[in-house]
Each structure stands twice: as C-alpha cells, then as structure tokens.
Length: 131
Figure 1: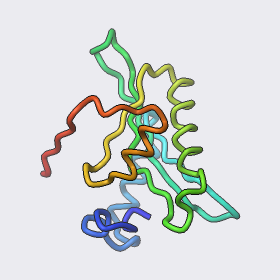
Figure 2 (figure 1 turned 90 degrees about the vertical axis):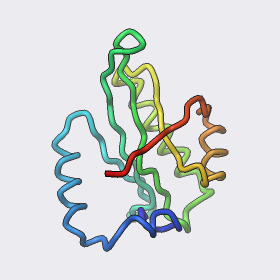
Figure 3 (figure 1 turned 90 degrees about the horizontal axis):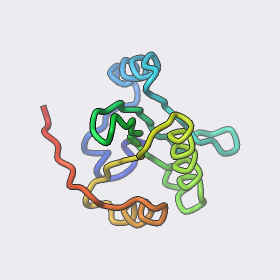
Figure 4 (figure 1 turned 135 degrees about the vertical axis):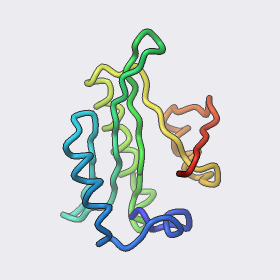
C-alpha cells in the first residue's frame, strides 16, 4: 500500500526490502509507537503509524503524530480511513495527548479534504530536509 500511488511509487521499493523489516522491529520495540492495520474479510486494507511525542511546549503537552496512512485503492471511499483515523484520535486521548497532528503532501488534495472533514486544520507549513 505504501507504493500504491504516484508519490509512494517514486520513493518505496520491493516489499521484501530488508529495511522494512528492520523498521518494523524498531517501531515495535518502541513503547511510543503503534503500527496499526485495518482489516476487512481477513485482508489488510489500511494502515497507519501513530507516534506519541512528549514535548516541552504547550506546558509539556504530549502530541500524537499520525504517519504513513494508507487505504488500499479498491477500499477507498468505504469509511475504513475514517474509522482508522477515529481510532487513532481516540487512542491519543486515552494516552493523554493534547493534540493530534499529521502531515500530508501538498499535492494530495483529496487527502486534505478528508482530514479537514475530520476536523484537522492546516495551521502550519511542514518542511523536510532529505538526508
């Protein structure tokens, strides 16, 4: 699913790439991380990564960061993305987070509308530096 769109296809690789397994093990070992999948009919049809970030700003508030959100192309529009993000928001509340944040590529207009429909607001400009 990570490579199932033009952006992902340009930056992801073969599912057997060993870096994915190492990343999975590192994320699984970190208590501040959750990898989550959505299933329908016993098949994985969606995924996301949820990270809890302790911080000093906003009176020491912990934030939740949602990353790597994907819904299998043949399952989009059926509500599974809404359920998955809803679960992540509820999980952030249970963990005592004061905010949930995410980034989405500026070219993903449909994703922007989707996140806005869930109450997210584009309040910041995200920047990245590839190393």
